[in-house]
Length: 327
Image (cartoon, rainbow, N blue to C red):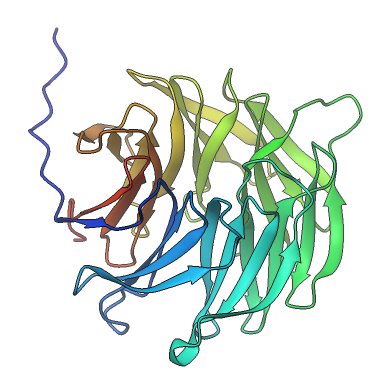
């Protein structure tokens, strides 16, 4: 029986142009009813961070802190208007955005030239944990911020050879204060680390190619990962902190650069090397839409708190989508 045809995909709500180089990182700030219209941050291949107003659809500020080296990761901090930007210049910069200051107030020097994006876990209003790729190929370093105190270095056991960490996800269960870290590795495996114990709780082989992106739904204790190959892996975490592969979804074309579950945990989006954004129902993994707007690899996807989706591409454009509104 032929697979049911998907309805024709919608067009983007609008498109942001002006980065003048490939878009490698996206992050929304705000977007809840109390905060009003969200701001969108984009990081480009040319080392610039653009701050976009979605009302005027124009960049309201440009941050130049990475010496022309590609920006790979962006994250705002909850304690006021502060932004973290990670670049291929081995700097992770902390920006003060209050009152239009847009200045770097601190930085962390990274020791890894890989493409692994960092991750944060906010512990208290003024303190947060930071996971960054470590000095040795297979290491992840955990720092207490803003003091930059080293908490520990997570290095796989001697007989495990997972290769480089490719993507990181710090999180905390609602039932426990212990910080945990999910790592997607070069050998296609996903591991769960207990940071306090400095040990791997569980590791699963998900992919035959390097894991390029992962996201985790801590309420459902379920996660998803994409790789340089043709499969999406859905996995779960039980009460004993054991990971288990639940479902493998085969894609038409290889290469997932980024993956994100929408904040309401209803749908997820993937960024594809095949120029396409794919939308899935999170609970069932039913394909909902294939958005074929971009003319080159899609490098990143991001959801705002209100459900708006942004995708950034090698074609130097950022597409903005309103799909399956929150119910």
